[in-house]
Image (cartoon, rainbow, N blue to C red; front, side, top):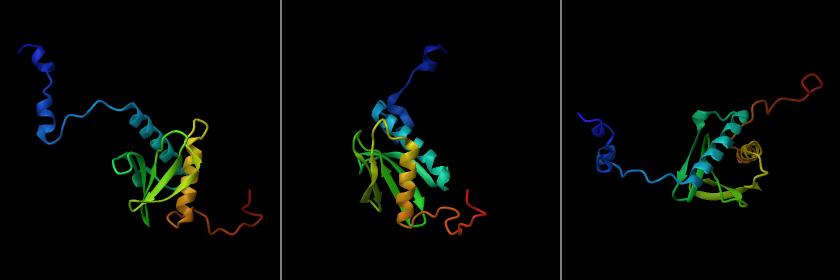
Amino acid sequence: MPRAALTETHTDDYCCGYAAAPADPNPGVAADLMQARAIAGGLAEFGIGSARWSAAYDREAAAVVLRVDTPRGLYALAIPEPGQPFPVRHHGERIGALDSRRTYGTADSYTAALFAAFLRDRGALDFPGRDVCLTPKNMV
């Protein structure tokens, strides 16, 4: 068998005909996905592990969204265009936005903290140790 036959690609046969061949990756979407994953990494500090979040492009929002599974349902943080605030959606409806804008100076850990606070304020996230009574013994 000639060597060239091994390296041929058949776009018509891609994925057994169930899906179209993927288009060229959009660099903007790739960067937004990286930012969503970085924000999700910051959520681990607030008890939201990798089993409770996902990041993907959402056609309805026309943006990359970070979805977080909470006891009150799925919340989605959209990654906006630079200079815009981060909108939050719940059950497909926009319910608010974070008090920060997407800029080069905004740290992903800061955005994660704001998103965790947003979820906590709506009763969708409990911070561990929230009911602890502060005494001189356990104050730092």
